[in-house]
Length: 351
Image: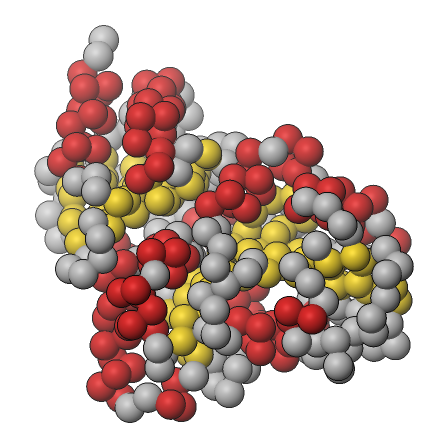
């Protein structure tokens, strides 16, 4: 793998370095978008891990062919070529992050890559989690070919389903009706992720890499727990609120939320998460949420999982807003909301 270092200096609550994964199907425009982002002076301290130098399309502009492990280029971009896996690349970058001033990492995947293995590495490998934290997964989607691609290629569907930010590219090639259709299709797959539009491959870096108040986890949580996405419900008197949003064309992919009004036992809740992850992890594409726990109701716990792997649970210093309900978002494949709900109720009923 190669790594190119060329963003903003962020103040984070801990010493781990935030990582954004940039994915998207072949021809979706992520390469062009990345190349233009790297020209921004605001990316002066971002390390970008790529599969090959040439694959990013930067070799003729920014990168000189070199077999050296570390190359300092004229524009201030630092690139290192590591003939190994992602862990080795990240470890090498971390060894030199102070010297190089690295404050963020972007990992660009190949167009045919299932993002799950790389997410597992970033979320579960102790050599990585001690030094880095997964911040975002950004997926680029070609507005012109996107509908056909989502129909024909399951990996493209999964790339969209697990994203927390989606970028539509090549919008100048489609009319308003087609653009509306692709947006609706993406929302049927993934209602968590906001959809941004890149104009001629360019997009405001803050839309993709904004660190949401520089590590203040309660503000970050609020950004994806906002009522505009999932959890606005007029009737707050019922103990359980559930909302089901199923994609109509998407091979069993479903997105839904589960809400609890009362605090839950964290021990039981964590055991339940482990159970569903071990039993149905392959089809548990993404779980994200905030939990009101009996043990410390003023300090909620954030959960974030992809298939069989969950982030280390984070306890927030305070609630991100006035709403103190437990709120969970699920994106699954062939798992109905009722199945998730039933298993949770079993654990809740145990004494």
